[in-house]
Length: 301
Image 1 (cartoon, rainbow, N blue to C red):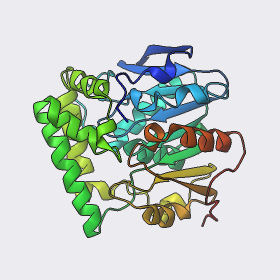
Image 2: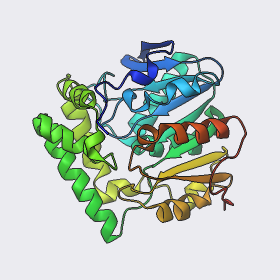
Image 3: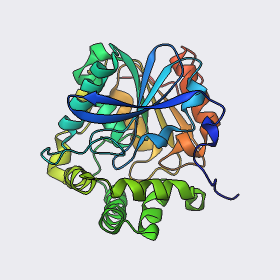
């Protein structure tokens, strides 16, 4: 099967808009669709709102969906004077809610966006309705297999950021897919354009230097004690080819959330929402609508 020429096919028959908000002086990009209660979609580290182009339409009948570029990512500003800690990113998300007039929202986060969403639920329970962790970051990566995958990701990320060359960016994008030949060409060109934007080299270099530093990463691990404090009903979506953490790691690590259920998607890696969108969207929309169609309902802590 040939990869798509464009990433926008799933939104071509949907009313959607790209908006820019002033978030405490930071011009912040959001791709939005739908009506109803809010859901905020958060991409992974180094990512951007297009992560969710195959998901906004199916959620639109039920939610006003906001796929934002987080601080220092995508086409959101990347001020030079910030440290780009996880705290900085979380603070920006809270300020985005205020700027967009959102009192409380469902949160769906992929990879680093999952870590941020988890911390939103821990620190700001009054702003989080339901929580979806999609191949989420935040679990300790201490085993040999974990470390090997982290080193691979670091090497691809460093080369991609440093050079911005087509093959380097393609390799970094391929890490997300079970079948790297399915990476749309347009995703590669979008990331190349992002890497040329003012401040992006600085913001992403600072962010990844902390994410890949074991001592810094510990500060934001989603430990059993922290997860036990999450009050939001939660859904963990994982894949059978996810790098760094396996399905078993996810099932064990996130089982400490009191109200949690799990779903495994096959034939996908770090982007099940894009590789297997029909299954992903059904399970997530069902969860948001109070229907349990997961393969593993879980028991919580």
